[in-house]
Length: 136
Image 1 (tube, rainbow, N blue to C red):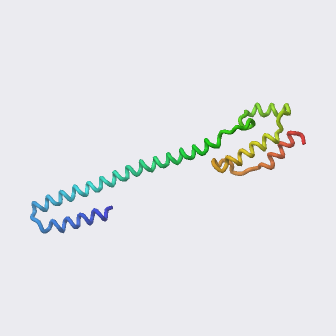
Image 2: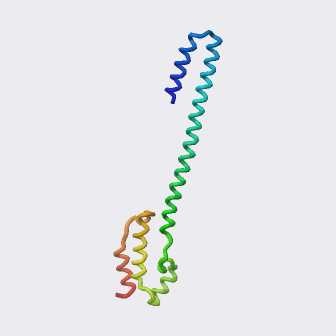
């Protein structure tokens, strides 16, 4: 953009050298106004670019949240129960610990590609401990 402005000034000064002093002054004032206008256009373009960029970022975040909310809710009774309820059901032998652990592992493998929350999995150890709790 600066090169463009320098070219305008160069052409204008060459044009004004052929005119008289009064016309030269008027032409230079017009060129100065034009240069200021071009600079202000640059600021306006940068301003709108920053607004559109921030809107684009917010839209991408909302799209990500939509994907998460599609995955978060489940109809599974085990997944929607509290830890206190699950532990009492395991103690009373209505559920097995292995079933509860396997249900949560299945849910993690379903949801994790979207939210990327699990760094390393230790599913086999969790199933082994659940079997020990059940008394196998």
